Image (cartoon, rainbow, N blue to C red; front, side):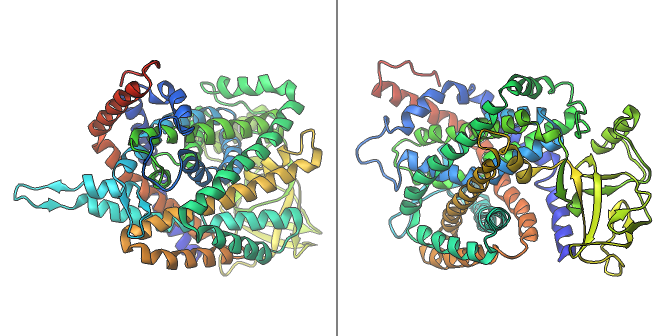
Amino acid sequence: MNKLNEILSTIDGHIGGSEWFVFLLLGTGIFYTIYLKFPQFRYLKHSLRIVRGKFDKEGDEGDTSHFQALTTALSGTVGTGNIAGVALAIHLGGPAALFWMLVTAALGMTTKFVEVTLSHKYRDKAADGSIAGGPMYFMKKRLNIPLKNNRLLKTGTLLGGLFAIATILSSFGTGNLPQINSISNSLFETFGINHMVSGGILAVLLGLVIVGGIKRIANVTSKLVPLMAIIYFVGALAVITYNYENIIPSIAAIFGDVFNGSAAVGGFLGGSIAFAFNRGVNRGLFSNEAGQGSAPIAHAAARAHEPVSEGLVALLEPFIDTIIICTLTGLVLLSSGVWTEKHQNLFQETDIVVLDGTYSEANQNDVKQLHNYLVGKADLPLFNNSLQVQNGEIVNQPTILHARSVAEDIRVFVDNQPYSGAIKITGGKIDRAPDSTNPKGLVLEGKSLMHSAPLTTIAFTRSWFGDYGKYIVSIGLLLFAFSTAISWSYYGGRAVTYLFGVKGVVWYRLVYVIGFFLASFTDTTIVWTLSGITIALMTIPNLIGLLFLSKEMKSEVKLFWVEYGKRFPDEKVPKG
């Protein structure tokens, strides 16, 4: 299984994890931002008016309101990335990574506007009378190539099918299995609730929600999303105001480190400009899903007679998801100072690197060498031998890095007992080959930097709420992740409808709920890795379609503002 995961990781590295994929996503956002003359800024106030229903007409066709479509799509994007992803980005790239997340979100606003507009325009009505839409529909209807002999080269049909298959796989790999896995782990660590118990209860609740289709999903998300946003906002504000003296320095670091890179401070060994850019863009794209083509499936169900109006509603998503919520998380982490502090924790083997030699954080030359190693500018010799351990303590310990910091106060345990013996190290890593003599239950713990959700959890305790702040993260993670599972069930169901018709949806939902329960107590690493590939297979055909239909998009925007001007003659209307 580990070998298969390595193969999938390699494939993902050449597709979703590659530089060309990031440039394709950013490039599409930049192109449309310039081509449509910065709609994310010029149209923002009109988006707020439309989401309140001011542009609606009697008899507009659809299954949900603008607000319900927005909250359904937001529940799919606001998730673990807002809690864990921001912490990981800052951990890897420093405060400047947050700046690049914000830039990515601004470009994503335009991409989301375009993909939702086109998907809404080419939506269909399913056999049961419900509205079915998404990028697969505009691909099938607009991306087939006419040949000279009056026949069609069905490129659009092929791309639509590929997109739909990738959506079904992504619904499990992104929206389902990893979400309940995160929830059950969090509830177990915080409240001691058994994984199977939390998985069983939430699977029943999930089934009760999704069996009602988009109308019940929209009703639930329209109440759940505002609730979880308020809880998270109050918790974040409590941290930021408690550490008010660090607000200005935190904001200064976000913008000031963009062109200089983040200097070493505390346990943080510094980040380069390129590293901050790479991590910030990567997490920004992951957070708001702009260009992926998932949110247009939810927005296609909205009641609207004019596709651009729903596109304007969708423009708000990256603004709320990344610019507001991710910025709040970033300020929580920076103002609390936890991102540079070493905390007692159980080490993750993937984050451990054993160096051949000793390096001191008090020595500037050593710090510079470690910094260059961590940002990929230089290599350092790795340990290839056996560490000797006596009663849990490493004898003649070389420098051990954990979570990109010099680990301290390291203790070694096997089955919760101090270990005595040897630990075989190969290439700086604990040897886990089949013939390795290392005990299977061997773990290391000590002080180091932390990242992802555990770091955000610590940050939320540095507030007016004290230790109770950690419960806000646990509850937030529960609500965010559960709402993501709800939305992705709809995305996958619409993809099934596109491929097999509405009769296949009931079987999809059954498998979805069963998988949700099973993932609460099983390892989902391989599925998470696979989802990286399937997300790329959703995004690539979607972006190709968006770029191909650029002229049509501009024409739709012009027609919309003509109608808007007639409906609201007293308002100043944007010029195209």
